[in-house]
Image (cartoon, rainbow, N blue to C red; front, top):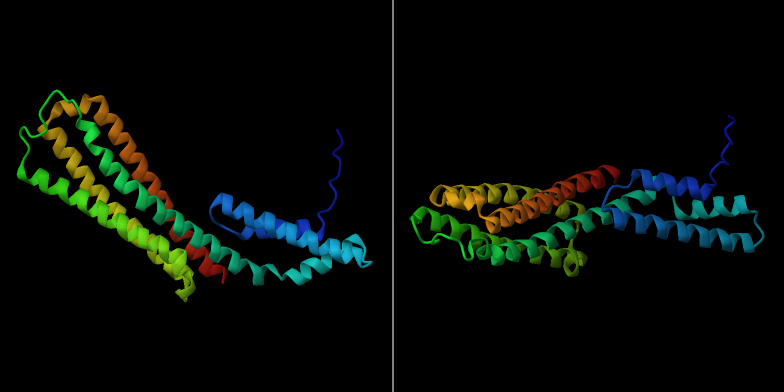
Length: 231
């Protein structure tokens, strides 16, 4: 069966495909940037075509005026890294307080008394986990302001994004260990908690929230490193 040869990509298609291949970042934001770039190129090409250039020459002129990938990609990549940093900080600022506020529901109407057999160490760990969660959420909220209102004062937004990502990865790792200690001690003191549906569901929610925050944080570092390499 014969294959039908595909028409060669025009200058705009080739340029946009090249831009898409070098950018790394949040999917939706990346897609919007690529779409906006295509629309800008098409508008410029249409204007050149109206002035009398052929379609091919109009596209070539539009691409040349837009700038080479080497010149354009770093700014796009820096913005994508900043968007990832903002998304990471926003998730931490919202998720940490929420999981702590909902945590008492895990023990609601349980067949054992929560105060029964609870050690002093257990309550120290619980309080530390709770307070550090709210402090971290507050810091994350300030970081979000840094990405928005404070961005005009940042000399190096990519470096800021990388610092945020590294700090988030470190904090989440330590905080997860503390949470695991609290949960392990809970099961030791109240073995029935291992089969109590609200506890099981609550732990699944906590694990999901922490795993997603960790993924966002790792990508924050990756995209910042990619932006630095593209500069």
